[in-house]
Length: 259
Image (cartoon, rainbow, N blue to C red; front, side):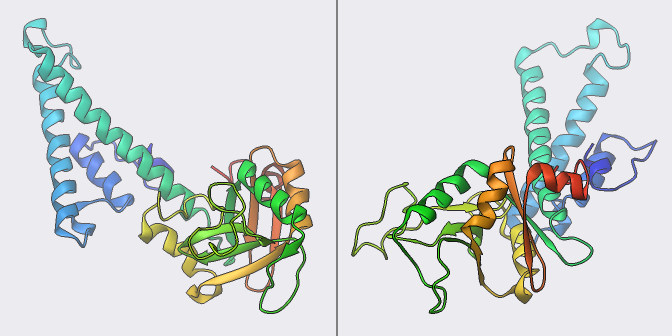
């Protein structure tokens, strides 16, 4: 599945270690692709485990109609082999998900696709629209708005004042520098959850890689939220942007464009 989803051809005669080598290279987790010695060692050990589990399966398993006497006699040995294989499979699937999220976010026309969870954006919109005052954008009063920000990750935040803290409560006067604003990161662009090398590719494709802040009127986001199923999508171009509910985005760009 990894090879197919990353656009690679699956060879007919490759063994398990060979398939893993191809998959790891396509996801950039092969030992030779790592700059840090610790990661080279870890991913090298993973390759060794794949090879050894494959050999154990051929020698002691029942995959080839082997006689029962050849089966692994120790339950603990069998559990070890299954758990090692399962951990590596989960790692590959998680890495594949991150890879697909980001590689599908930069279009051939240079437009960037940013996907946000609907529920938290609703909280930000409510705060901005119900605030009596709003933060100015370089001296300009934009009224209720979402700020699309790129610095440590890429995220949306409300411009309402007093600001809304990450605990969901209004930040008390005098504590503005002590508490982060509530924010919702774009899928794959949260530095607490996602690899820097991957989300930075998306960040670098906007405004020539500089940190940025784009004010989006709250009403523009509200319309998309009201029609969205679970996500909203912001498509950023060189000089413009568009906001879509997930259903409309998939109608325009294809049924599986958000996968």
